[in-house]
Image 1 (cartoon, rainbow, N blue to C red):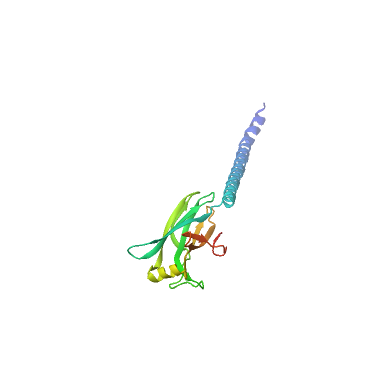
Image 2: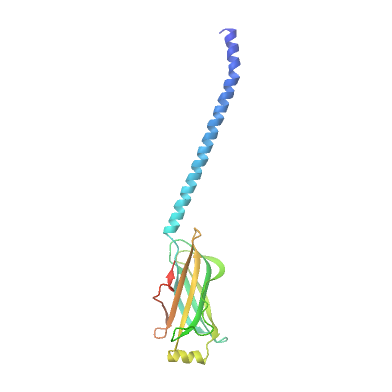
Length: 201
């Protein structure tokens, strides 16, 4: 090899090395972007699949049963135990509960002090599939001879009315409403057939 050719090779070696380094850098940056984007798309696809699964396998919180009414010997107020349950697949976070044990007359007008059954915020708790949770609900007024006479004569109807607000793992808020009337013959609370007051979102 001639000395001139060697000098030529030496002269172009540094620029070629720099170009190769730049090309490798561009390739690595492109590969990193593609890998990052692919990772993000994969994570988004997994999250979408999870949300779709939760939406199609939602929790369903219902009133499983109501026990009572019982009489409190000290306060002379009637009370009931309302047991709710999650019969859906995924967990539900219960964030509000409301229930009133109230009376209505033969005209279906609420007896004083009326009805207050809207859900009220409570410390949130989770119900997994199949799990139950009880609430104690006490009437606002005492159970006196007047109410006992009304029960004996059948002129008043004892009702357990309320609502449950909960959300699923997607953050979708749902509500269950219930309206039960006490049947003296079977001594059980019977659900209303009106889907405006007895419902599940």
